[in-house]
Amino acid sequence: MHRILSLFCALTISAFAGDLQLTLPPAVYATPDVPMSIYHDNIVLTETPESYRFEFTCKLGKSEARRWTLTPTDSDVGDHPLAVTVKDAAGKVLEQGRTMLHISPRKSASAKPLRLLIVGDSLTHASVYPNEIARLLALPGNPKFILLGTHKPSGAQPGVVHEGYGGWKWSDFLTKFAPETPGVAAGPLARKATSPFIFPAADGKTGVFNLPRYFKEYCDVQPPDVVTFLLGINDCFGADPNNPDAKINEVLDNADKLLAAFHKAALNAKLAVGLTTPPNARQEGFTANYQDKYPRWGWKRIQHRIVQLMLKRLSNREKDGIFIVPTELNLDPVDGYPNNNGVHPNPIGYAQIGASFYSWMKSKP
Image 1 (spheres, rainbow, N blue to C red):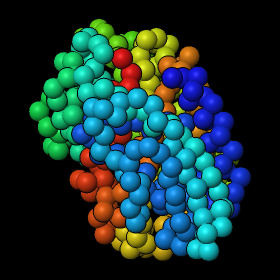
Image 2: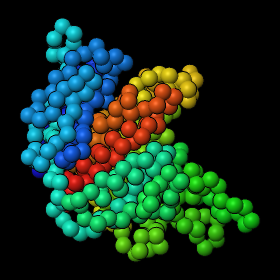
Image 3: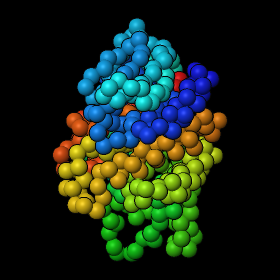
Image 4: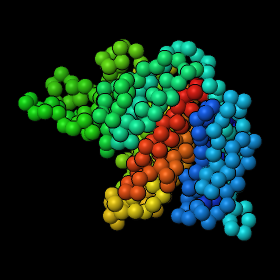
């Protein structure tokens, strides 16, 4: 399968050249009875996706007003080429791209218990998509599983823990450290002062990044089998929408450092990097959060470029334990968000993120 996906990846990257910047990942993952969609607004760079015609060519799924969607059955298991053509209102072809739809069997190939660590920012802290991952993993056909981590916010269901903190960036997990002050209570769990992967040095004033110690103390000495990452919003939100590449590449340098550290400490772990999620389709969500300082169109341009550069930097990195998860495709930018928030989904949107991670996990024995 990896050879096939690498061929499609080359076609995907070439789609960046057009004005709409049609951007597709090398693969879309799905599994029986779990809905999966590709929303038009999430694959092109325009303020008016409704002005264009999107045609999907695939033996499965159906096109709707704002998306292509399917709920696979057991008979659909396998690889299915999927092509996207974008046309203007008059029917002129503007851009084309391809990806591979991979549908995994309902029953996992391995009965080995799964050890899963979820890492992220406020989207993870909300605990809704980790809850959904846990719900899906509990379905018949999956092996036993355990979620690892030190953070259990009030929204986390029984058995759900993770390392997701509001406002955090890739670099925070590598460097964030604050010495404990005697007699002063720790800060709110939504924003821990110290990375869970950093421990006090002998002097108590500096911190040391130590994943083996984290695994020993908080993961029963065993490293995880899978680590998911969903980060990038806080890192790049303030970038210049007209020239975001320098900032994004700086952020991806930090991502590479964290991923390399995990690969070294957990050589056999699969490191699943979620592509940074798209914004609420409504400007009012951004107005409610940021007034006029950060408009939707500015963040949309940055987010779209983040996805492009993540695909460029992280594709075909399986030898480093790195895998891409297309979390940006399946999140409904309208019904998956509340009216009053620009980047934090509602329960529907969070569940769609969870479904994307789960369907990717089902593809990996």
